[in-house]
Image: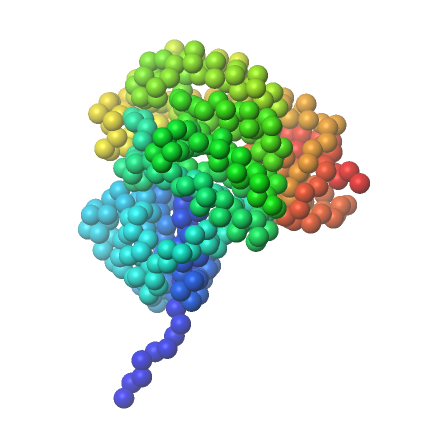
Amino acid sequence: MRTKSLKKNKINVVTLGCSKNVYDSEVLMGQLKASGKEVVHEQEGNVVVINTCGFINNAKEESVNTILEYLQKKEEGEVDKVFVTGCLSERYKPDLEKEIPDVDQYFGTTELPSLLKALGADYRHELIGERLTTTPKNYAYLKIAEGCDRPCSFCAIPLMRGKHKSTPIEALVIEAEKLAANGVKELILIAQDLTYYGLDIYKKRALAELLKELVKVDGVEWIRLHYAFPTGFPMDVLEVIKQEPKICNYIDIPLQHISDSILKSMRRGTTYDKTTQLLKDFRAAVPQMAIRTTLIVGYPGETEADFNLLKEWVKEMRFERLGCFTYSHEENTHAYQLEDDVPEEVKQQRASEIMDLQSQISWELNQEKVGKTFRCVIDRKEGNYFIGRTEFDSPDVDNEVLIDASKHYLKTGEFATIKIFEAADFDLYGEPVV
């Protein structure tokens, strides 16, 4: 008589895409751990859950390739089961089930209880704020809302994430307290749109109120704002940033373009004049603020004149941080009805030109930091350097401060006062001030 195998499953969660996905993976892992499951992040495990991204073509390709890679491991007997969740399977579930049928099961972005059930775990409502964080111990993402109500023509996020849904302030404070108790010193506030926070549940924009409550959490030393939509930005937030030392002088505000005709077609609800004025208001209210933005080039109908206007504007605005994407023609979006008429090589050339401009601006702004002293958090040690960040820099996307580990000892996860003695385009070199 054969006995049933008692082999214990180890669940490996693989995360693709943005910080919102990182957060979702952490919630999933927290739930699994609470059910007594052995769970790891991007390590070896015989059961694999792939949290996919479906935002633009490159991300979709990466997600599909990752699925195929793990199915190959399944075929070779290294993995027993492969589950797929996240934005790609929310958006393309019927197609995926048909094209890649060897996946054990597909789940959308709102099907956490069903996914847990498939993994032999129970969904527990009482686990508010219980996550297994995958970021370095000193910072964590705090997702304050899900979904988006904006009608941007190029964006597929509402198709995958649904309508905007704010998380109540009390729940976010509890989550922040639990993170702080685990040693988290920096909260990075994320949502598809921070600007809209509170409108659905409080009938008013409540980001400033949320910030006032979060700064009271003991142990949290930095709070950083990511992904604020420019239209309807609540200006009372600027006052809170200025007043509260815990809130970093930093904002990520994706502006996408500046040509009026492109902004109109993108359905951004703003203009060249309004956007420029908003940035001037930001700088006037918080002169120290580092502004990060993202731009899209190669949008349908973008002429050479539109692009030249964008370039001149980037030169004039001198953003501290800037990322540039080429337009991706996404089915079921409003812009999909337009002709994707800018050739791929032109899109790539335009993106390169913007980033060349930005690296020069970044180099010039970084030279101004030489000789100055900054409070930095030390994220990690890499090779011969301790890697830190100033309050003007977000992890993974912004400048880093490199400190020679052969000469100086610093504790990761702690703050240190660093004097900058050299600066490159995107890196600063410093030494601790004793």
